Length: 120
Image 1 (cartoon, rainbow, N blue to C red):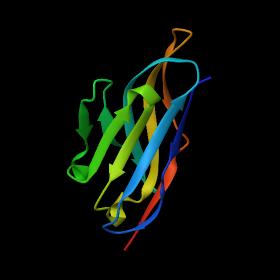
Image 2 (image 1 turned 90 degrees about the vertical axis):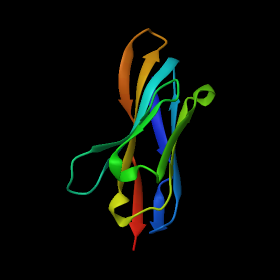
Image 3 (image 1 turned 30 degrees about the vertical axis):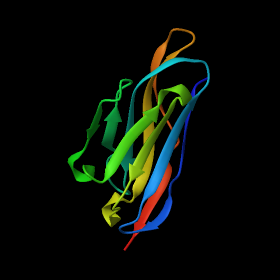
Image 4 (image 1 turned 30 degrees about the horizontal axis):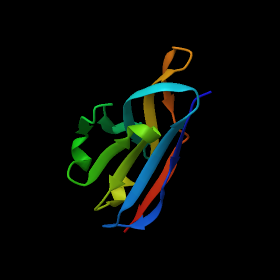
């Protein structure tokens, strides 16, 4: 069984920083493209940042220059460093990953989400 587990969310004041982690575990052959999404209360889930297995990154415009996505392939773990946080960054953050399992089946998985709250 494969699962993604996020950690690192919490409450922070505007202008502060948080670092989210997402660890993939289970019978995994490889973890390919990974991504962070977020969903604010009453809004649709939106893509925040993506990273390929080779380290190529992409960001939504609202977080460019403030957030940095990275990964440690040896640990099957992805990170999101969030700096200069704004109240509008408040949301539940989810990780998503394209995983090739030991069974040779490929699927996309979601983590359970971690709450990030930015106070003014």
